[in-house]
Amino acid sequence: MSIVYIIIGLLLLVLGGNWLLKAAVGLSLRLDIPKIVIGMTVVSFATSAPELIVSVKSALNGATGLAVGNVIGSNIANLGLVLGITVILSKIEVQRSFYVTDWPVMMIASIMLYFFIAFDKIIQQYEGVILFTTLIVFLIYLLRFQKQAVVDEMPEDDEELPLFKVVLFLAIGGVSLWGGSELLINGSVSLAKNLGVSDAIIGVTVVSVGTSIPELAASIIAVLKKEKAISLGNLIGSNIFNILAVLGITAMITPIEVKADALSLINHDIFWMLGISFAILPLVFFPKGLRLGWRDGIILLIAYIIFVYTTIT
Image 1 (cartoon, one colour):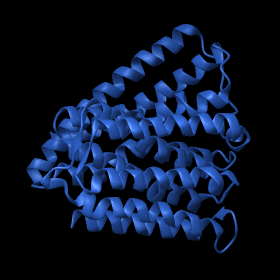
Image 2 (image 1 turned 180 degrees about the vertical axis):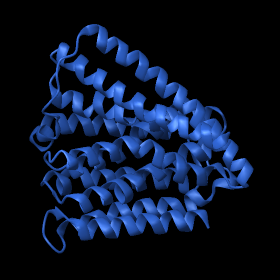
Image 3 (image 1 turned 90 degrees about the vertical axis):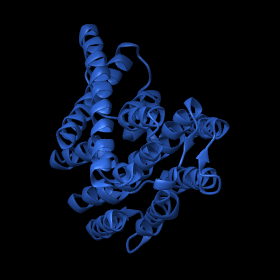
């Protein structure tokens, strides 16, 4: 039954995230809120809602390894799996904002997470406040000084929804995310116990891939529809939000402790996250400047496969 719970939970998370995202954009259009604001706030929150709900509920249920492992694994999956598959299918032209704003902030957030958790093995509530405050400062900076860097990231085919549809999608999406997170956590923890592995390993593999499915689906659909290439900034932004918002909010609610059975997060997984995050910079500039192609995608995908293999073994 654990596998059934996980599959149903992942399905509900994907559907719920899509419904919530559609409702959020529809609401923004009805309220005449600029898309740039929605893109960096409501849309970012909606696409990271699965990670947030899974991490908060995991921490409250005592499965703190799952909470941290979900975010670290999701960040690795976003760059290794999602970005890897995307650029294999279609090359991405990288904008200047990548190395000026997006990548540096992602690395700062990743390094902050390392120092917060590596030595005392716990993210304290005040550290959660620091993480979330950093996100607010980043968003304010982005909206005030870097609007042009993200204006082209917004969807171009949104349509205004009737109010009853907005409310319906919000309700169904919220309930689906809640129900999906319940099933996913219960199934994952049960599976971990049955297999004799820590919840941290399940978090950085099954759960992290599951919560990255919306990003993967969106990227593949964009390529198949021959729409403009998905900007690298979207996935970089998702990683920033996962660390600063998901772990920040979770830690503010309850301290996140890495227990003895989840030390692989500190000794192994977080170094993979830092390594893959850093590797994106040279891949963008070599062999062709400001471009990610299929060769880069293969490198990222191989790195992700190696990560999963070393994590399981």
